[in-house]
Length: 157
Ligand SMILES: Cc1cc2nc3c(=O)[nH]c(=O)nc-3n(C[C@H](O)[C@H](O)[C@H](O)COP(=O)(O)O)c2cc1C
Image (tube, rainbow, N blue to C red):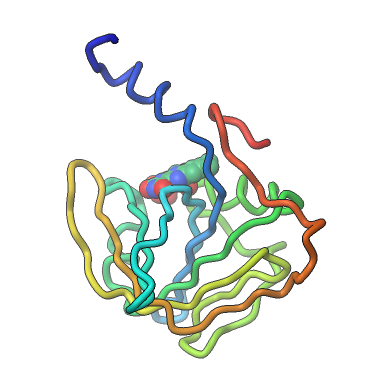
């Protein structure tokens, strides 16, 4: 074992493979999306999920203010969407979406989409944990051939 430092911590965490989501909000008609892989399920009853955002993110205040949020699970075909929403001030130009019940942007052709209310924010270290209650779900693709986008070792698989 080696003593932890920032470099080997980052490298070690990169060996944990995850799916990729885009979380999205509609705050006073300004729509913002962000690529996030810190997503996790939290509770079945009530239906809760969580993810964390960097406190220094340029849009953190918009996310902190938002009562509703969509969480979009990306397929392997949506790598461009993931790259786009990992940029600062990313635009929605080419990303096809529609609005959910709470006017959150729901990205088309995802593996699944969740529409949630934001229940609790917990600041922890340099991130804020968002705990969200799932209100609506969409599973467009009842097709097992469509593969998930996976992030592993700082690369898309
Ligand atoms: C695969 C992947 C996963 C990411 N996951 C997270 C995450 O869970 N939380 C987070 O705050 N940023 C995450 N990011 C970084 C943001 O998507 C984005 O790059 C960064 O927030 C952009 O800067 P800004 O937030 O200051 O606009 C991830 C980036 C990639 C490529």
